[in-house]
Length: 296
Image (tube, rainbow, N blue to C red; front, side, top):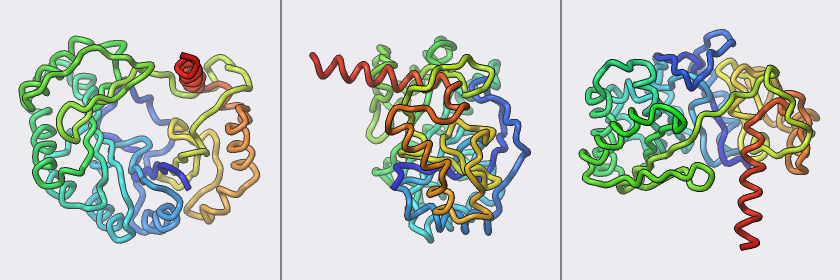
């Protein structure tokens, strides 16, 4: 049982953020038949289905049909979006009982359109949030600012506009190493993080010791069906199999998957690609913080 399975419905995005690297894989949309066949296998294995790995899910031309399939199989889904198309789907997202959480990557707009005013972009997102609170108060909404090492001035403008619209005050003191989420209004949270390096063989070798949530509490499935152990494996370097041609259970019980999972649980990085992932170091720091807090 996983906490989350990232089921990518499209690796195509309507913008190109500096935060997201260019995807080297062929552009792909998952069609409805493929999506339903995979979702049926995914739902019994996970608490949450995230319709995202790379790409913009709201840009999928059959997004509303995908929502209906999720509702049919009682999937609890999370959606991560840059928010540019939210006005088109506001009512449907709020009305859909299968939508558990919506994440808006607010750093995306200024990253792509630095000279455009923020209001036309932010207002539909704010209106969506307010409508969700009125009609579906249990719906979680995250405003993401994953750029804490740059664009400080842009974030301040966003903070100010959030405060003005929702009549709240945001504490600017951020402790990225400890708490990365702040509730700012009802079920609305501000989620912040620093930029990180995406795994790559071009990065220095990090050693053979470390832990990861990949294969342990989540996996990813690309729009072409490729199963990967981690949501950061954007180009499917670690190809565990293909959910379009193989049973997902068979892939998850394969020798390669089992070795990876057992390795992470024992603090061993089995795959060479994982040994070049600097994100692994975050889990080491988290473990050290926990030790310090325990000793204190």
